[in-house]
Amino acid sequence: MEKKYINRNYCCFVCEQNYDQLDQLKLHIISEHKEGDDYVICPSCQMPARDLLVHYRSKHIGESIPPGTQSRALIIRDIKKKEEKQKQRSLNSNKEIFILKRTTATYSLEVV
Image (cartoon, rainbow, N blue to C red; front, side):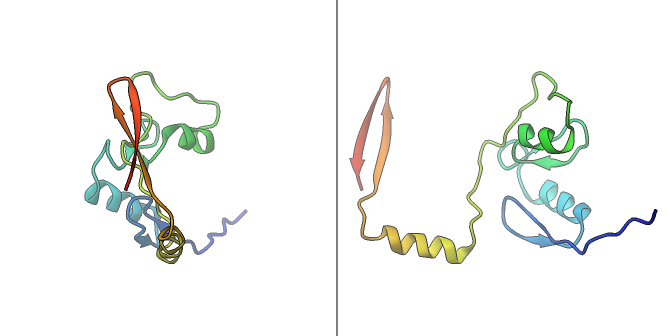
C-alpha cells in the first residue's frame, strides 16, 4: 500500500513561523528558542513540545513520562492570530483591568 502525504504546514508554537516540513520546524525550535522556557524535549522521540503530557497522550499512547523529566515549558505564549488579538484589545479597551498581586500568603487586587 502506497503512503499518501498530505501537503501540510507546520506552525511554530512559540513564534507562529510556518514550515513545510516537520524537520524544518524541529530545527527552528531547537536553534531559535530556549529549551526549558519555550519548549521541552521529548525523551522518547526527541521532538520539542510545549507540554509532554499532551504530547505523550497523542504520540506515545500507553507510555509514561520518565520520572524527573520537566513536563512543561515554563513560558507558554498565546498564539492567537493577530486579528483576533487586536479585536480582543479593542473589546477590552473600555473595561478596567485588574492585576492580582501575591504578597506573602495574601492576595490583593489592583486597578490598572
